[in-house]
Image (cartoon, rainbow, N blue to C red; front, side, top):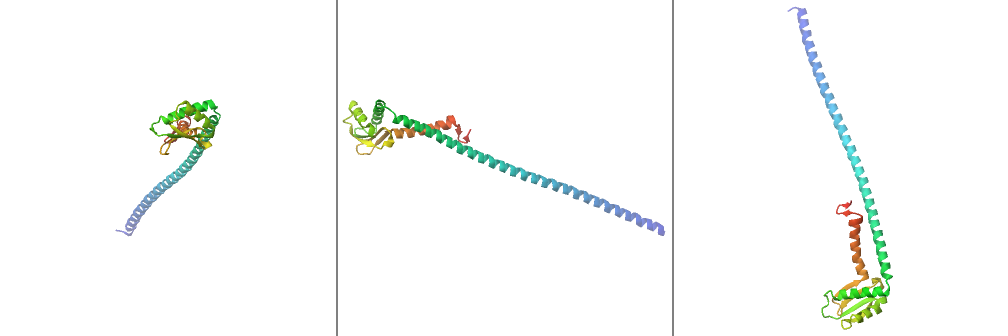
Length: 205
């Protein structure tokens, strides 16, 4: 082989090696770019997810804060309505004329005695001061002098009605206005929740 042929042969081999190196470099560059793109989109998606999560958390906090605020207003409103109703009932009870109070005492006393709690025991009847004369008249009119041992006074906060106890104090039936009003309050709260505020087990609807 001549020197010229040898030179050309070496040059061709060198060009082949160079092309291979260039192709390999291009392939590596392509893979690097593709991986860089994938990493870019991964980071972009991660940042987007973090931003969305942060936004959701922020909105959830706002919703919870608003719900708490509304619930507090709801409770306040319900309490105000309940208080107003109870105050009106109290005022009406205190404003009852003697004739109406007397018939109320008669009904509540009979209801207490007919509850079957006392048997043959004599009883003590307790009423507020303004009703002592009225209840005495009722006892006489109903022929209950042999049943009622004595009449005692209740604290005025009971507003009216009767508290009937066995003579030994072991059994009592509380038919005072105060106690009956407390029972009415429980009913009112349920009605307010069910009919006015539409409160379910999961909250306000």
